[in-house]
Amino acid sequence: MKNQTSDSIADAAGARAKEYVDNGVDAYHALAEKTQEVGKQVDGYVRTNPWMVIGAAAGVGLLLGLMLRRR
Image (cartoon, rainbow, N blue to C red; front, side):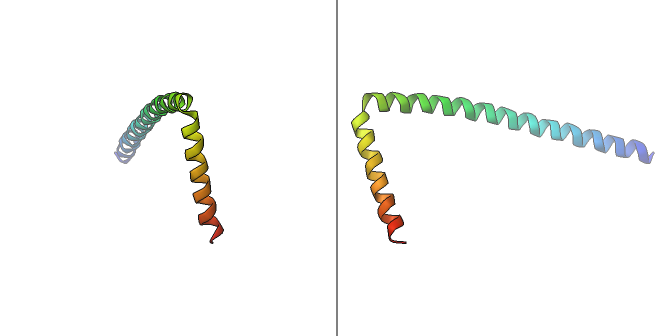
């Protein structure tokens, strides 16, 4: 009796663990797909507005440099 109970608990835990892994894999694939979509959009924006992106990157670099220098 005790062995059957522990087997059923182990089976239930294994099924729940598999469900969590499957959910994690699905979330990973969804995130990877969304990241690729955003990457394509960013790439298109950078290609159409390269100087604006360069200016923004320079501005962010300047601000970070000023903030880190004051530490």
